[in-house]
Amino acid sequence: QRQMCIRDSDPPETWTYTCSRTGPWLGSSVTNDALVTGVAPNGQVVKDIADDTVTIFTPDVAIEKTATPTEVPKDTDTEVTYDYSVSNPGDVPLASVSVTDDKCSPVTAIPPTGNNSGDTNGDGLLDTTETWTYECVQTVNIDAELVNVATVSGVPVIDGRPGDRPNPPVTDTDTALVAPFDADLVLTKVADNTLVFPGTLVTYTYTITNDGDVDLLRPASWPPSSDPTEPRDDWVIDQIGPTGTCAPLDYIGGDAGRSEVLDVGETWTYTCATTIDDTAVNIAVVEAVTDNAAATELVRFAVAEVDVVSPAIDLEKTSARPVVLDENALLGQGGTAIAGPDVPIVAPAAYVYRVTNPGQLPLANVTVSDTYGGQGSVSY
Image (cartoon, rainbow, N blue to C red; front, top):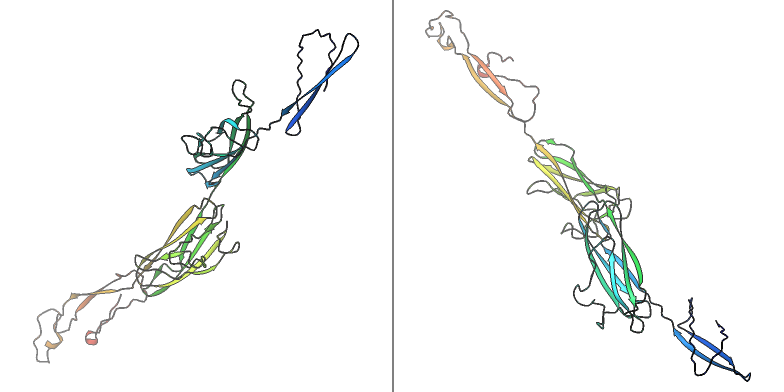
């Protein structure tokens, strides 16, 4: 771009001109040529050319933000660590670098004291070869997705500036999302008979259901003696009482999705049969871990009681009336009759029988008989 100014110039004057131009600029530098011409009193034309080169700088800053963990249990206080990585993709150092987060404070450099751990030369400037790191720790309790926005700002340093003439800052933003999950595991246990005689074979049925919104896995160490290649077969453990267990549990089915993963909505079924001799409070337990980075553990218990009962009967016989005439003392048999209004007729003894049920079950077809002397009958 050339501008012409026609005026008279007297020696030894020096005239000054300025010209401003705004980009866009291409390349790393721009060279401008200037041409000046003049006409002497004798009509001779004189001219001169001068040039100057302007170096073009492209300052820039970049930030990357991550959250750990990215999934947290719903409506539960959970600590989340945000990490920020700040780099300089431009071509000049940056001063006064700062990082802020719209939902987490304070954002501190790593280490939190002294120069940032990425400031390798310790000059306090974010050089183009450096990456500075920051972090912020926050306890969240959420029932919906949480989006955090981080902003980094830095002032370009060109030819020793900033100073009294700071350059406009450069900025960048990045987001991190933390999502809630609602994990749930339901364990049930049912006995096919809850009232049995000693020595009865009882079959238990167990189900585990994923009622949450995240898939579940069996922990690698659960149970400690298990075969990790067969997590379905021994995922549920049964403890019948303080000393006894029902084992092994037989996996019946239900794993219709990903193999060996209790997918959302799935129900797996197990059975186990054992002989019960004494009343037992039956306890089953299962432990699961969520199939996400949070790896939240869930432990569930289920109880079933089987009562062992024994039938029993008790008979109590009481004399209601003693004999009035002993048959061995009848007349004609060498005896002497006992005085009384019914002599010499034999008046046999009368008995009362009391039958009770001290057991735990009702009894049917109850009968009482008395075989003494083969005489008399027992009636209800």
